[in-house]
Image 1 (cartoon, rainbow, N blue to C red):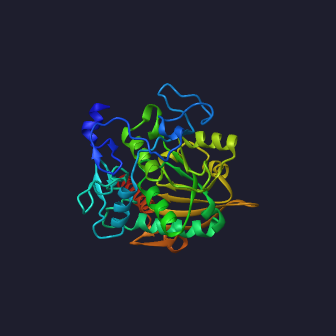
Image 2: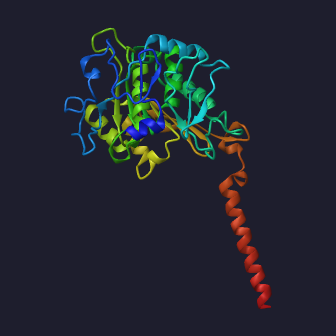
Image 3: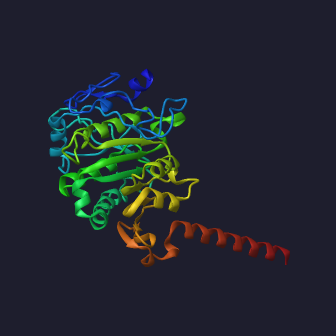
Length: 348
């Protein structure tokens, strides 16, 4: 752990959002209930599994870091201005370390895929608009699918392959600040949060994310704080949903290719989404899909588009001959035909 702290940089945040190094443990927020001030809760009243050999229990609450209202205000005043510049750092695309005022950025340790060859790479010359336009796409279909009454009284949000949570933060910020949404529960699903593949940077990002919304309320009662829960796999979340019935209004699947491997994707989406819920998918190479869990007809694709030459297009309008995989197949076919022709000439 010490070597990671030295290599990766800030491990914790002061209440004002400034970074400190190698500081293990955080200050609990005064407004948090007792269970959120303690370490990650994993007893049977809060999760459906016993802690594994690595100490992780599916369905446990995320322990939030304490981020002050002043720190949030500074970040929110900078977002959407020319001074807000994302950068590639430690293999991920992240918010800037410092704000124009010189103070530390409270969400600097959130991140998203930094693979320069990725079709969804935010800092790429040809792909820079994929994720921002996908965010607008998500907002549009959440507006259509989730009734205003649910948005304003508390929706359940789940994210598959959420990783270091930069896109989730951007989406929820838009929904809360511009659409007046309230969150009742947030479920985060990624193997990086525990078990043998745990990544400290992902766990830290998760705690920053939960800390950003530590005082977010969907109701004014004692139990009105939004809860953040952690799961390792889609199957774990599916079992938890079947036990509790707490299905999501919104399921985000943002470039979660690894999380979809070796699973029945359609069955998971049907189980995770409540009737009328919407699943929003960004695939790689860039393709965006909106799927509704219809009350009578089950899963139904509302829209699917691919990103070609700097714009989103319906798949029907894109010639299959221009796709990368089709061009590869055509080259292989042409090469094999050429080799057969040359072999026939030699035999003659």
